[in-house]
Amino acid sequence: MSMLKSSVGRKLTMAVTGAILVLFILGHVLGNMSIFVGPEGINAYAVHLRDLGPLLWVVRLVMLVVFVLHVWFGIQLTLENRAARPVDYQQKKNLVTTFAAKTMIVSGLVLLAFVIYHVLHFTLHVGVDNVDQLAKAYMGEHFDVYTMVVTGFGKAINVLVYVAAMILLFFHVSHGFQSFLQTLGLSNECVQPKYQAVGKFLALVVSIGFISIPVLIMVGIVKL
Amino acid sequence: MSEKTMNLTLYVWRQANAKAPGKMERYEAKGISPDMSFLEMLDVTNEQLIKQGIEPIVFDHDCREGICGMCSQVINGVPHGPEELVTVCQLHMRRFNDGDTIFIEPWRSKAFPIEKDLMVDRGAFDRIMQAYGYTSITCGGAPDANDHPIPKWQLDRAMDAAECIGCGACVAACPNASGMLFTAAKVAHLNMLPQGKPEGARRVKAMIAAHDLEGFGNCTNHYECEAACPKGVKTAFISYLNKELIKALPKGAQD
Ligand code: HEM
Ligand code: SF4
Ligand code: FES
Image 1 (cartoon, rainbow over the protein chains, first blue to last red):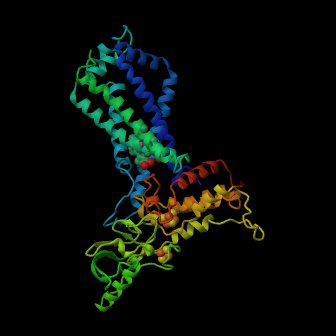
Image 2: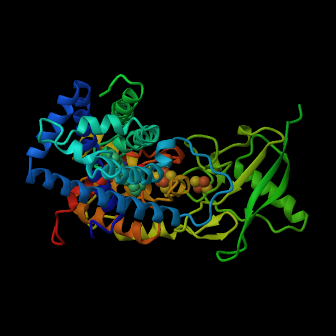
Image 3: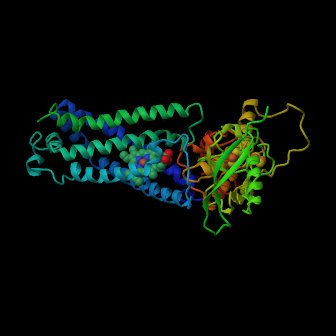
């Protein structure tokens, strides 16, 4: 039985890649908090990341593969699941499932669009004003991430997109966290409610962490 | 004192055969006693329909005591209806009120084609069982009472899984029409016992493969199956199934 054909095999792949994505966003939100230290904080963090050199590229490559697998199987499994009930109920009452669980594909696809937008924006600097000036603005030789982020969130539309995407991230992770533990065979009826609570809490902390940056910039607490 | 009876409005799925399109039809069920089971209510309704020259409603049933797993109806949107931990045959009309409107539909899943009205073909479950829902070990004569080679709690756990009566409510309830709770229950009750363990790796692979072949959906952990299961089979067994598969993956055909 092939791991990439069977239902449970593909679910395990979803779970492993989902768990790696959760670890990634945890690291990401922690790293981003350095913006509250000021320009030196996040710029120094960015320089440290770049100093990793080839290792950074290995991490990026792994994340790309993880992300593509997660998205690919997510779409494939969802399509199969829809096909498994060709005629729908006239009346169907769900008893325990959550809004987050029912909308995984929606939150997932919006996150996919968001990740593309986000990488174009902050990694590839598409639509960033004065890129040439920023390029050597930090200590005369490094890219000034701080200024880019603060000016980027001067635009209301960017703030809106980030806040909306992070609300969907909350939903995705609030179901996803307990889901990957269940899928990886680590759950039972005693720990399942605890996983659900921890997942919601973690999702809340992460999304509030991410949201705090554009919001605090917008209200002028974090500024140039 | 004369017994109080109820009059109900039923909306029932009528479908001539597997290929025909179906639709909900409205019927009145008159003079229903609260002491009747849901199936008895349908029996009475069918007699009333026959008198009106209408073809009676076809529905599955056998034991009528909650153990065979034949009765299978989605009542007001919930497989086996509003009462927790019972099958349709053990649901009683006292759970309803005079004047109620009740929607009755079959299990809906590609893997369970509708044969007629509320009756579906659950052969898919049989084929999952044929794939490895057994053990090829012979264990000799009957052992002494209370003689068991695994601790009691482990035995109880296997018995919790073995409670599954194969009714298919888990599939009916699942937003993805997945048969994972049934498959998990069957794998767990054998793999947890000493007689089933030696073939555990082969069993979990074979039964999941058979499940997938039938056109069931994939589990995305909504846990609706557990809420609908008349026997209280827990989704913890699905987690166990996944763990058994992880352990089995590195094993080759010779194991
Ligand atoms: C920041 C990015 C993301 C994170 C942290 C994340 C995390 C997770 C986690 C932990 C799971 C549970 C895994 C399991 O048990 O099967 C999951 C499931 C899923 N994800 Fe994602 N994911 C992300 C992005 C996406 C994207 C872009 C899609 C787009 C298709 C997507 C679609 C899905 C689907 C359809 C499921 C399965 C639904 C389920 O298990 O209930 N995810 N995700
Ligand atoms: S797991 Fe429960 S709902 Fe599913 S077939 Fe067995 S008894 Fe029925
Ligand atoms: S008829 Fe046997 S369980 Fe309901």
